[in-house]
Image (tube, rainbow, N blue to C red; front, side, top):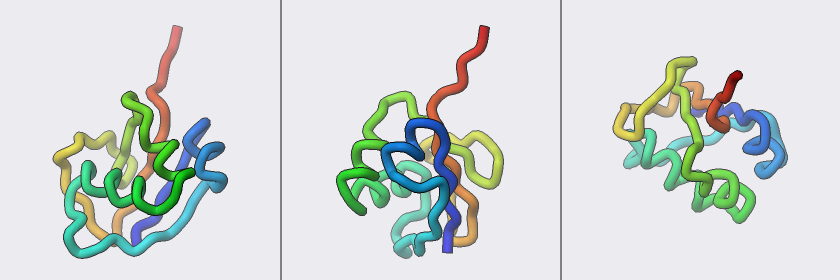
Length: 83
């Protein structure tokens, strides 16, 4: 099972800081993970809809075409801003 971590408003929209989900066998890239999450329910779809959502796989920033597996830790969070 993949472990999902949600931060900031992503956590607020989904309603939980973490969850464990089994990825379908055809979900092998970050973009496919986001598509999978959108299909869970309205809360997930709303959280994933933000165009600037950031994703980390195993604590490393990930691009949409980076690989994922069912054993990964996948974090979703808004972009970090500083000043």
